[in-house]
Length: 144
Image 1 (tube, rainbow, N blue to C red):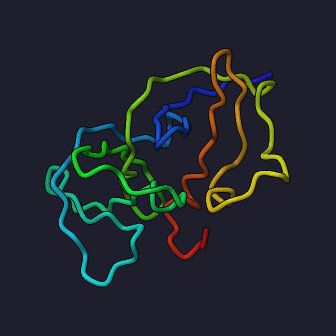
Image 2 (image 1 turned 45 degrees about the horizontal axis):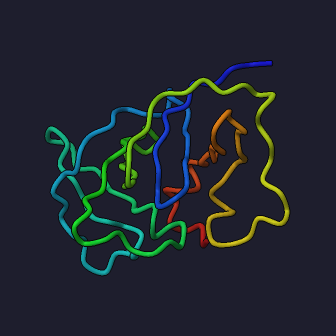
């Protein structure tokens, strides 16, 4: 049995986790510059202390309805081989410790746009935590 430290966040009614080691930082809403002709999953570009970072809207990537206009997204900035990328999420959670014994692959019956972005799920005491595949989530060439 191994234990993973996961940084958690919510999008719509779903709880997600990514390995803490992949997270650079978590920040409040940042003004975004829209990118003309960019796919809908690109929320825009943010300036993080002089570094321009692409913001990927997880609601759009997961095929969920748009965020209410009065609700601002939060940013989970993750490290990738190509640099930092922001994941736009609804709410920030906490760091949880999850056992590999509680991890299950996604069932074949799980359908919908987000299936390709989920590595599996951790059955925690009071919720199901979906393990987000960050690489696939930010790869807009992966159609979901």
